[in-house]
Amino acid sequence: MKHLFVPLAIAKLLIEKGFNEPCIAFYDYKSELTIFEQYSETNITCYKNSEIRQEGNVLAPLNQTVIEWFAREHKIYISIDAIREDYFLFSLWNFTAKQNIHDEGESFENYNDCLTNAIQEASTLI
Image (cartoon, rainbow, N blue to C red; front, top):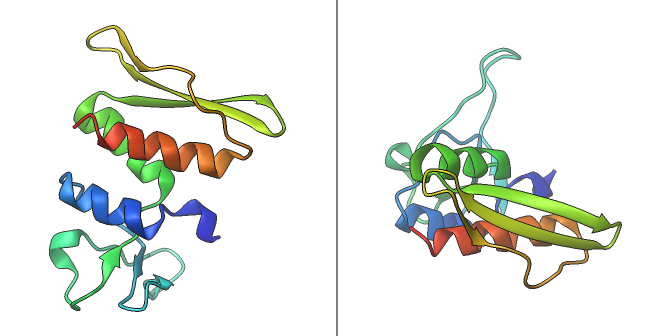
């Protein structure tokens, strides 16, 4: 399940870039991914960066939450293309400017590495 969340380094970078969306998990002071306790099956505890209280904890957003944040807040759309089972590329689009911001370039052997690099590259644009 860890692959569903952005890595710690990306989480820290996103906070610097103003990311403050609700998250269901965090990295603790030992850099371990921890899911917030659930109070019931229908009510999942979520916190924003401004609400996290313990020193050294960093919220761990889901990859999908970050993708949607880039699209909503910055009009940057992330696209991952699977060319083969072991060959992935990403593109970054700004549809407002009708401009391809990043196309092709480095290839990746798996989807998660490609997505992590796409998010990191998108972070440099804001």
